[in-house]
Length: 290
Image 1: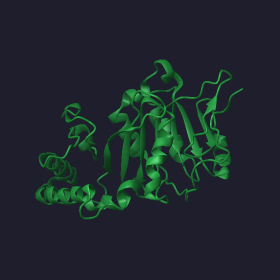
Image 2 (image 1 turned 90 degrees about the vertical axis):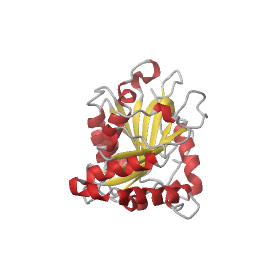
Image 3 (image 1 turned 90 degrees about the horizontal axis):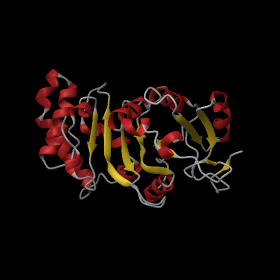
Image 4 (image 1 turned 30 degrees about the horizontal axis):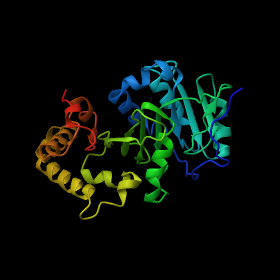
C-alpha cells in the first residue's frame, strides 16, 4: 500500500476562489505540446510513470480532466494528478478517479505517495495557474522552490495567471536542471499568450502578469521598460492590422527582437499567439527561427 510522501500535517497554501470555466487553460496545454512534446512522451527511467500535476484546479475539476485528454493525445498512458487544498473540491472530483487520473487533498507541498520501498511518485510537469494572486510577492520564489523539488531533472513548471475565459494569460516557465531535489529551477522566460479574439495590444497583458511581475510595472523596472518598448514596436507595426491581428502580434514581437530583447521568434509559436521573452540564463543560440 502506498503512503503519503508529504510530511506536512496541513497542506501548504491558501484556498482560492476556484472559479474555472471550461477550456480556460486549453492554450496552456497547446503551448506545452508545441514547446516540449518530448516531455510528455518521455518514458525512459523514472519518466516511465511520471505525472502531470495540476495544482489548484478549482471548484470543479474541468481543467485537470481537459488537460488529461489533450496531453494523452501524445501519451495515452500519462498519469495525471489534480491537487486542491479544499477538501470538498477533492471529494467532488473523486467520481472522476480512474487508473490514470487521481485527485488529492494538498497544497504546494504536493501530496505525492511512496511505495512500500519508499520510492516517491515522479513528476514531469506542474501547472499552477491563478493560485498566487492572493499571496505577497515575497512568497513567489519559495513556492516555485517547493514545487520544483518534486520535478524530475528536465521537468517543467508553468505558473501564471489568465483572464476568466483564457483569452490571454502570462506565465513563468521554469525548468528543473540536473542535480539534487534542492537545485533551483532555471528560468526559461516569461510567456505571453493570446488567442487574438478581441484584438491585441501589449497593455492587455498587464492585468494578468504573474505575481512576481504585476506590481513591478514601474519606472526603472525591466518589465516597465519591456512594455514601453513593446508598445513602441506595436505602434510601428499598426499598418499590419489591416491584414490581421495575428500579423500585428508577430511583427511587434519581432520588433522587440530587433531592439535586442531575447524573444523566441519561432513562427510556429508566434503565429499561434505565444511570445516568450527569454531569460538571460538561456543562451540565444538555443533558439532558432523555424
